[in-house]
Length: 281
Image (cartoon, rainbow, N blue to C red; front, side):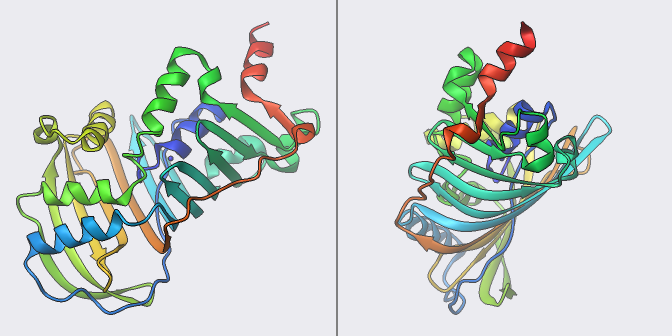
């Protein structure tokens, strides 16, 4: 699912449907007053520390991405954990029309993703509603992808906050309400190319993802609640970028408990790797 960085969903859609996709964004309902006015540097430090106390949250996301004259919009809503990586979300996009639907239920645990392809999709898969994708069974590229995803860099909001700490012009915009929650809004820009030398492994992973997309700079906006937790993160590329990305993620219901999923019945599941072998036969 990029970028919110949940390249997880994006990668899955690309593999399963043969489409370039990405995922991320927005809906939130936490409570609390805005963060007390401290220096911007201290505020970022407090937010980083507070966010590191959690392993999962409810996320609502939206992302628009365009490249080479093609555009894609995707939204998602559900539970996401980054320690360990797991998700249970409903993704929506017109790109899913190949399945005869605009909504797909996705679940992931570790390196295995499950996609409910709906009634129309099931009609193309022998009546089975779920597609299983074990990335470690997709050759060297799949294993590399699984390793990348499980680094958590694209999913952990604490890593996203580190982008703000690297911004030389991060500034406080003011107090705003985000989905009923009073929050402090911060804004700034970051030069992705200048982050390459940073020693933080998770941040390096984010830089690598952006570099692969041809992204060299990013505009950032962050809204923080009274408990120093991100309630919204917005990222966008310059209009001149070869790949245009505009992504928003809203966080709520933070928890120290990881997301757990129950795999669908094997009798109602088709393995993606098996499908690919059959297609090549």
